Image: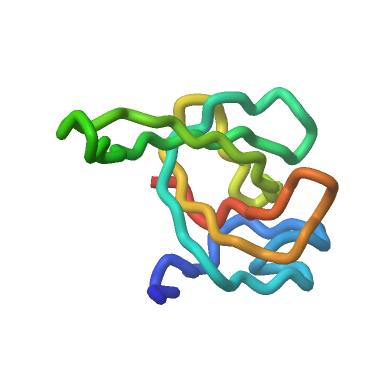
Length: 103
């Protein structure tokens, strides 16, 4: 597990679900992806592609994974930004990830 991504941003926020200024701890998996949608309040949709090998046909298949992540005010990622997200406790019904850094 690499936590070298967790460098405090210059901006501060009063968000309780922020990994830097709130009470949310990050643990588990780490993903890099692109913000597909940032229309909801403090929520972004992050997608990344992966390749699966089909053993039967001996080819690779491209799959896309899309998850919702919490977007703190101190990071405020926009659409088409490349971001790093970490797994955390459930924040809402569908959000189980938090944006940690913009690349």
